Length: 194
Ligand SMILES: CC(C)(COP(=O)(O)OP(=O)(O)OC[C@H]1O[C@@H](n2cnc3c(N)ncnc32)[C@H](O)[C@@H]1OP(=O)(O)O)[C@@H](O)C(=O)NCCC(=O)NCCS
Image (cartoon, rainbow, N blue to C red):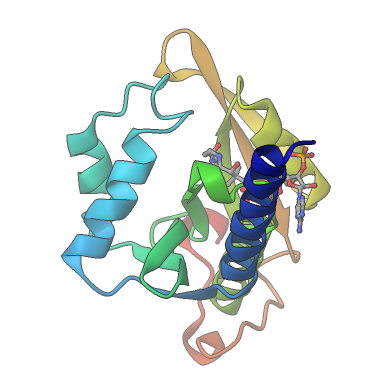
């Protein structure tokens, strides 16, 4: 290795360590501003599976800005490493609608920690986490399987005709007997479960 190559290698190693430190130092918190939501929408619109699913930047912004959802960020300072959109409403509450990690931050545990956070948040209010994963999204399907998600059904040609959405569920058990966290006192089984 000549001097130039060694310098480059050292620089790359320093950059990787800096990156890893930032990833190790991230915090998960609620999104605070329209600017943050717009950045999440841009991340989503530029990434698979949403490119194949033909989710336009405008639709991604609508999904991220919907005030009935909860949006959480994995943030290292001002840098957004990834985000979650959760839906705690409707007949099957506890839907993990979107999880996305910036391409350069993937494969370092950020996604697993975001999903762990989503589960803690949802299990305060509901004994079920639901999510959909596209049939072609092999890496995400592997991750969900490792995290204990079970296939509930297949929504054939649901978002685009060429691909299916696979509905997954992770459950603490039945609604009857469920004692959630802060919201336990006001818990009623949703209409679909009564
Ligand atoms: C799916 C997604 C959210 C996962 O996020 P992530 O940060 O890459 O996830 P993790 O790092 O926790 O785990 C993914 C992989 O990294 C590995 N990993 C986990 N922690 C790690 C760590 N600390 N160091 C190195 N590797 C690690 C995992 O074993 C896993 O490996 P595998 O996929 O080869 O089996 C992310 O890849 C993403 O945003 N993809 C595009 C959008 C998408 O598909 N979203 C899901 C839609 S349903």
